[in-house]
Length: 200
Image (cartoon, rainbow, N blue to C red):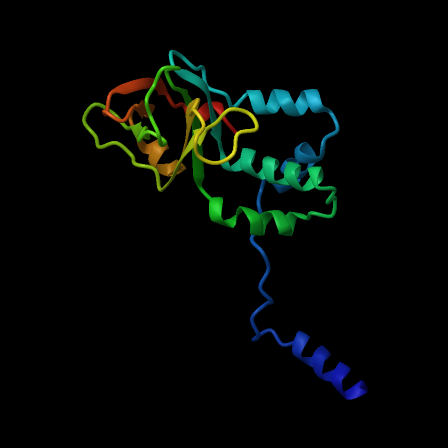
């Protein structure tokens, strides 16, 4: 036993050996943990509302999920499950797939007399400027919104939920970034400026 301990000490003192791997540190981890764990529901709701976009026409709601907001949401999910031992290292691991990403979520209300049997092919992308190519989402989801309690086929689709994830750097490099939502005929249903300087 003594020999094993001495070997471990000797190895630990060798400067030529690489340091043990550690999870990357997030500069905002402590703030995300504090906000995600807050018991002040009004403050948390105000924080969430600050990421909402102003809807119009058929848009029921729209919001932005930045890297920082996602970190707060992840912490909140763990708190809601009764897990209060979630650490900064745990958060860094959970955030690894979302580094440098911004997600836009838009819910589009359908006309009550529509004839869609399946989720219509509505799309979401970011217009970058009058003379540059638009940004397609790196990850994209399109989901039908059904009446409360409805499960499976055979129910009227109330709305379409679009979720697109984009590299933040690409949006920030655009001269005039704007969110565009189109219907299944490629008609523009909604356009709004996307100013990421407004969001943490």
